[in-house]
Length: 335
Ligand SMILES: NC(=O)c1ccc[n+]([C@@H]2O[C@H](COP(=O)([O-])OP(=O)(O)OC[C@H]3O[C@@H](n4cnc5c(N)ncnc54)[C@H](OP(=O)(O)O)[C@@H]3O)[C@@H](O)[C@H]2O)c1
Image (tube, rainbow, N blue to C red; front, side, top):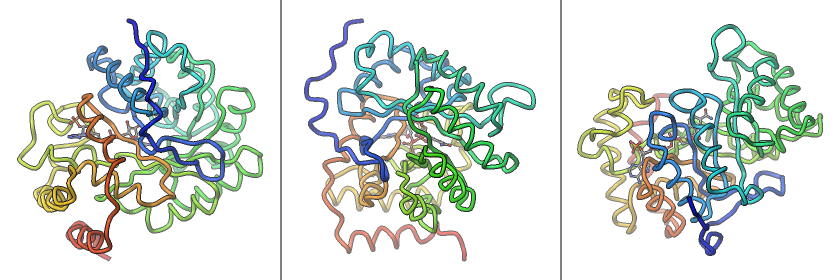
């Protein structure tokens, strides 16, 4: 049970100011969506969280529904905090979110005030925390007025249950309204979370610029396309991988021959640069200073260590960037 964090934990990580706020986040953060639930080995969960902290990862991202089973990632994280990180709360940025289905009935899976106010209390109980550093609206649900959801976030801060707020996956029109409402209420949006990777570049059209102009930081989630931007699937779908698991969010059918072929070619570029595909994929996102942090998942300490070495990446030359763009062309949606 004894754990003393590495004294060198702040030496290698880089920290980036989150939007216009003074809060810095590590360039690489760890998310607990998969691999930290009640179906996973608790000892391994604790090892990965401790190793991340040792490497300067100060930001851990949760949501009320993370598991499986839903809620269990928060329970496991709370246990790690109590057992190992009790004395380090002020060195940590812990986030959670509400808005996806978690309990049955009409109040358990939307962005209503009812859902958010109940969810934040449930998440605080599961983790044993007194407050979250960041609490997010997990999604725009298409029904709840943005005004209602943002007022709930503002009240969560006023009640002392979170220090900052964020939004996740909001379409640009709703995001712009959210930024304005939060700013007018004196609780500006700290950070916005969107899926962003070499394979998923939709946020480049409007979202990144909008967030930056509005003073919000930006977190890129699933930066490795759930593993497809690593060397994991280059020669088939290995047993135990996310795509092979029945409960996983990455279906076998999503690992298409076309994506694997592009990943193979990207892998050659990465090897030429003296790094792995995972490291190059993270470095490619971090070359944009508007990206505050890339939010990775990891099922082992080895993955975590490999990915954190993306911080030592050489800069991209113009030729390399052009080559990467051209390799991605087959995956670009038709205009
Ligand atoms: N706001 C939202 O709606 C939302 C949605 C999704 C995710 N997120 C956040 O983003 C976080 C990260 O998402 P993600 O887990 O999809 O991120 P990801 O980093 O794209 O994928 C992580 C998975 O890739 C594989 N992997 C990672 N490093 C590897 C390496 N070096 N070599 C081989 N395989 C490697 C592992 O798969 P295996 O398990 O197969 O080993 C790992 O579980 C989540 O935990 C969550 O916090 C937010």
